[in-house]
Image 1 (cartoon, one colour):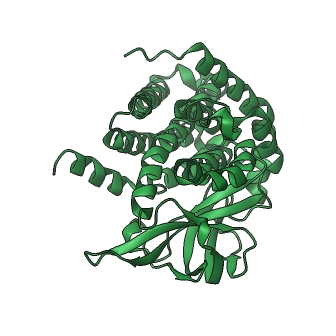
Image 2 (spheres, rainbow, N blue to C red):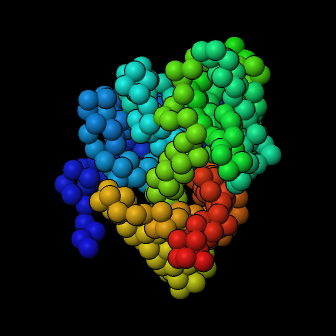
Length: 382
């Protein structure tokens, strides 16, 4: 029940906080407005070891834990969510499936570059016509001799089209189960494979400095050895990956919510109205107090989920609670921060405008708020 951080975790948090303020804050607004990917920031995060945080040293990782990743994500998102989601997707959706389910050969080939930040990987799950119904996957992979032939498309895939993207893992229907349901498997598709096309980047409301694309596979052939994990276990694999990822997204959402508090405090002390700082007015004080309350309780929720995961205890419900609550808090705090800033909150030169644009996707990505409520209800036995 001790929520105080260890010395190692506190040192990491301070290090990432300093990095976010000194290296990310001065340049990210320009990347955001120009919709450019911040390669120099990614390189610096790689040198800091952030991409290898929760992985063992034998694979090139830092020997930390998943909670360390969450702390880093929270601190990055206090400044910018595009940078935070780049790290989150690279680790929990990109490298983690290979670490969890890959063969020794697959791990040796891919993990060193992914954990150093030299390369990124995408997680090809969502499809244009399925959305939250991941079990409705239409992409198909047929075994032809010693090759998988993949046909289909994926939508909204993060880190899938950068200059340093090395691969995407793709969920596909590979057959039919004895009960008549779809057999889903996961297959590694290296970037540049013939038949694998990355569409131009989306025009998005937010996360403008992150990389997001639609992917198509037209008779795309990869070796049979690119099967990730056991054939037919793709559904169980991505459920495990998403459960973990929801804790990370909750941490990112908490960072955005806390960033809204930071910016509102700064503005409330500087902005004068009717002869005194607006922070002297109770209406503003109560708004900021409520924002801090929400960020604090959301943080406790993801701390709890992460602790259960690391202890080897069931954590599906707690991860869903953390993701649902933190994403709601992020949206609430972004709205209130914009209101406190008034007209300036609608100007892109102020960080809260970016926070406001970035917050909404947190209630959608890696499981909508409705899906989280379904998970919680089912885990309760309903």
